[in-house]
Image: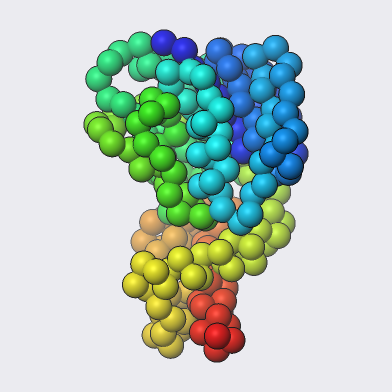
Length: 242
């Protein structure tokens, strides 16, 4: 079975990530920009496609340009380990599930965050090319038709600058998420504004054990709480400006 590795990025991905994808038969890189621009460098196919504030469209565009039987999606701040490479190759040569959940481990200055919402997160990142499409403009989900299996080797997500990166993306993500929550029947309310942010902090720091990850766990819980607040603020803003 042939494998395509797909990367959605604002800038050209780093060499470390690209080296970890050497085992793929094709590498598709989608950069934000004019769709008419494209280039081929060996197995690397670079396309430009306008983001238009819809990450699902970007990922579906990458699917449309993939030639492999299977597609592996990787973000530009993630790394594929040798163990994960080996397991992916084994899985795509079996004809049982049409997609796989992959556990993702956040690394903050080489420390793995083992708790909080992201401590045991599993995401569908590997699937047959025609198994489904991505939905939702932000925090997009790969909607799969068929059985989904699970891979045990983790995908490593490097977050050495996660505080500054989180803050820089917060307004963009919250602004996109606010109208989506309305369509998902989660409208603005004073109760959600006052209760969701502190409950988000309690969930991450106490209930899910972020306290055991030291300062990074504290920062993560705090930022997730602020993100929850910012979404509600944008919901209120949209409601009162319409």
